[in-house]
Structures are given as structure tokens and as C-alpha cells.
Amino acid sequence: MNVILFGATGMVGQGVLRECLLDPDVEQVRTVGRTATGTNHPKLSEIVHRDMWHYAEIESELSGLDACFFCLGVSSAGMKEQDYERITYDLTMAAAETLCRLNPQMKFFYVSGAGTDSTEHGKSMWARVKGRTENALLRLPFAAAYMFRPGLIQPLHGVRPKAAFYRAFYIFFKPFLPLLRRAFPNRVLTTVEVGRAMLAVARHDYGKRILETGDIRAVLQAAPSN
Image (cartoon, rainbow, N blue to C red; front, side, top):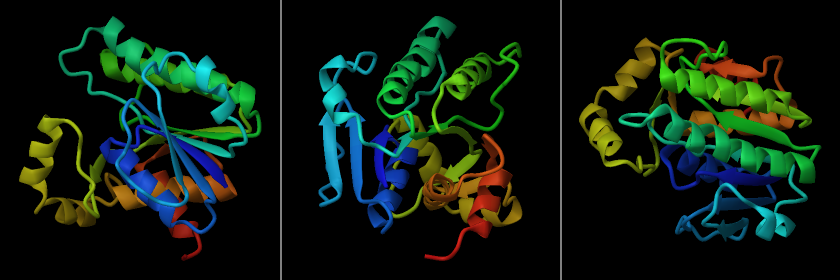
């Protein structure tokens, strides 16, 4: 597989990048972001691109791809809905529409979140915007599009959250996360599990287009051991 990854410097994206580089079925990984990841690997090529709403100048580097793992996102805390929608919906759709036109055979994976509102009419602003984004992605003529809705995620193997608030949160709760994962397996995943589940679905597909934490765990349980 040749894959492209958005958001490779974020917590989920770091985990997905690691699993892609380790996976023998992945021949090439391209990342797109405003900054480079700082990772050196023979499989990895990085596209540093400042304007994440427009891709005309780099279209030649966005074809020949089998899967996209879209892990780019921001917290809605303190944001007005219009601003959050510009980053969450507009930015995502600009990338997805370009990739779909250039790679109609592609499988597209979007990291959403537990509690996303598919009706687009609930009280939670972030959940409405995420739901609208999911619905728009599912309407695009990709070979398949999958919405991943993990809940709490435990970072492993040196993966660190980008935002200071989340770094502080994970430092404080680090001793408790393995316990929570054992007690609530359908609520807590690791960055390794999210990455491996995406790759497994990219290879073998899945019966649902929207995957909650329990579905992600089911993918891993059904996947053959590497």
C-alpha cells in the first residue's frame, strides 16, 4: 500500500505513522502538514504545505495512493462554531475532495471521536460539526470511507500530545490509563491499536462505515497476528 497521512505531528497521527512505518504491507508513507515530523525513514516522504485549504500546487504529489489516514484536528475549547467548522469541516473536505478526484480507488479514514452527532442537530457544537464532516465524507465517491470514533486514547512508544493541556492531562493520568483500559476495554484504546486497526481495515475492509471503540477493538481481534 501507498498511504498518505495528515496530522502526523499530533498524538493520534504520531501513532498511526509509527504503525505504517512498521507494517510490511506499507511500501510508502507520505505526510502532509505545516511542519515536518522530524522522523527519518526510507519509506517516508514529507510534504510541508502551509495552506491546508488549497492543494493545487502539490497535486502532482497526491496521486497513486491507496489509503488516506486523516488524523488532523483541534480541540473545540474556547472556539466559536464558525472557526471550529473552518478547521474541522472546511479543511478536511478540501483535502478529501482533492484526494478523491485524484485517487477514486482510495480508502479514506477520518479520525472523529466518541460522541460525534450524525444528526448534525444536537446541543454539542463540536459533535454537530464532526457529524457534518463525517456525513460529507461518506457521500464522496471513494472506494470506501471509514469514520473512526475512538474514546480515550493511551499514547505509547514515546507518542506525546501536541497541546500543552493534553500533555499535562496524560502526564497526570498516565498511571491510571492501563487500569482504565483493562476495566473499560470498549472505551479506551492505545495509539498502537488505532493505527493497526486502520491498517487492517485498509487491507480487508469492514462491515460498518462508522467504527466506535468496540468496533475498532473487534477489527483488531479479527486481524491475523503480524
